[in-house]
Image (tube, rainbow, N blue to C red; front, side, top):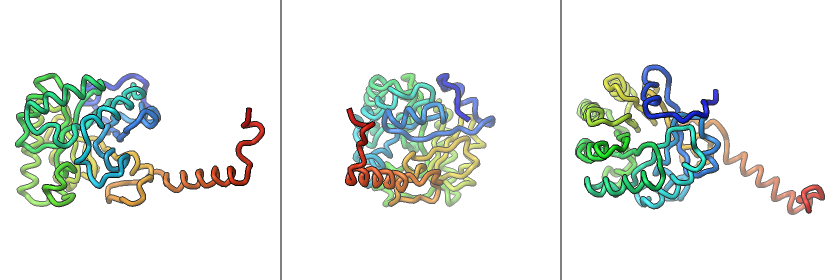
Length: 266
């Protein structure tokens, strides 16, 4: 069912917890933002664009200027869904740099909120941003920006120590004023405990069905990335094959001289 064209507010998003599952998807441009807008609750301008859009092997080389450019494009077309932008790697290493870059991102794009990949060591940064009036969603668990430090993508919460740390982090971020949490790559029982222990909504990716909502990278969901197939991705369209077939038909029509036709010519 298509959502109302009315803008989804932060309060309305939070009120979905325990009532209705939150739907979220990434978008990086005006074209797809316009298609997705109102069909999902949340659109994330994610740093995943560095991989699915930019062809890079990870997210770490993305610059703040790149996020701003893509967020501006999304904001031009998305008027109903709640809009969140990622803070890229290296843009919030200190309290001052986080405040400076977050303020720049908000002013340049007018997104509704920001998402940061953080552990509790950066609780003071989250607190500073929230004190400044910025809506913040901490991203915990598997954090792609930490790939080099951790030597790859590591599923989290497998042991009691990790599970305890993740829960304590979630509670600390909630206490600091975070409006929600993104849980990535956390084993389902741990993600369930976190979701049940906090009063703010959780959005999961690869973290089981008990989260308050789910998010997928749009190109994964539509089957456009054939070289990567994470376990948690469900493809709703064989997009790559459909597009290739359409391009082949177009190219064939051009070569045969059947395109353009007389009706398609001035």
